[in-house]
Image (tube, rainbow, N blue to C red; front, side, top):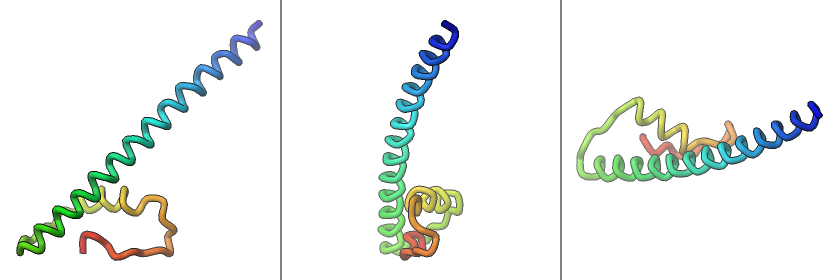
Length: 80
């Protein structure tokens, strides 16, 4: 009986984990989209003669725009 309860609890926790993983995936994609938009706004600002530099925002953009890439792959940085 105890074993059956543990299996049920494990199944319940596995379902919750799957839901949380999906939500994290959705949030990551939303954040990536926002990072792309931010990069576009920065580029537009620079085209118009503005000077923009914010280390924290650059780190956030790098986190989402470079995620999943191989270390040896170095595309042109959007914040240069």
